[in-house]
Length: 400
Ligand code: GLU
Image 1: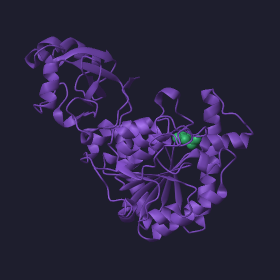
Image 2: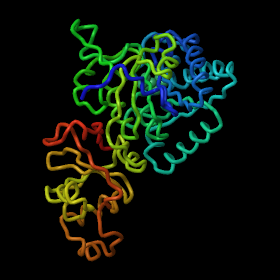
Image 3: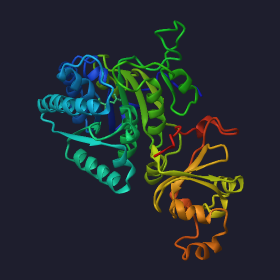
Image 4: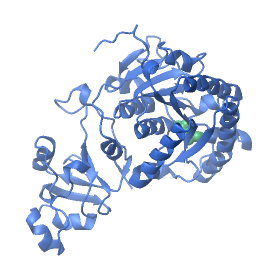
């Protein structure tokens, strides 16, 4: 597909924006909060605000700033030291934003999220309505991962992913990822002089992943790859992603005026419903069930619900109502959904017709193991017959 590179930036029309700034920008490559940079963003965001746009800022930098405040020159390795640094550093981060936005008479709010907050349906809905309320009050929410309470196993890990999840949560039109590089290149420009700059592409283009492999900064956790995957995720709610250099003068104002700066990754995939996005955005699941080919066909071609008879194996420990992955016989995830039976009950009723459930378990709550309305399906570019348009973000299915 060719794009009109003279067309205006998609940001020109975006009413609701998520702006993500990385650790190396916020903390001046780890030297401590870059107050001048924060002031420049606040100044630009104040203008966007006055244009009637709603902005959520996702800011990294807590750990880097904590290290600077504590006088640590190398990044600690133990979880409790990283968490301590984040706790110290987050104070500096929010202090800088609060002061900078106050100059423009704009209030800020601190929102610290964990994967669990977004995976639990009630907490997810609460976070969404709180952010909507803040936006309607003209407040700029400053979001970060709640690094102090998360451990390695349950963390979102990088703020590019968090930015995309927030974009999905509030159905923002654009996700602007400001970083220390100009945008995406076809190869790492520091190593390959032939590297071509990508001005515009479809966020679902599978080639982007190959192009993005590797390029990363030493300070933050996300490289280009996490940005490309974030763009795919953002597209699920119709969000276009821009990856641009935070060092570009007036980058936010220029994008909003329609100028093309950085790499624009267009969301050209069908928009999923909010509930289906919530299901798809679980990064860690409690378990998985292996389906036979008949069940996979019934789900993907026949648009049916999942019955116990199609399940051949159960892994993990889950309860009724948990989100569980459905994998094929090679372990590849083909879908996921809310399961109606616990892991132990599923083990007892798998391979059995639904009319035997009551006899086996003593009672039957549901005919289906997963109802179609509570399921999402993965369509991968790598799958034979799938087109690039069908590509979904590869979703991790680590078992807890
Ligand atoms: N949440 C981490 C921090 O604020 C940063 C994660 C990232 O850089 O992607 O330090």
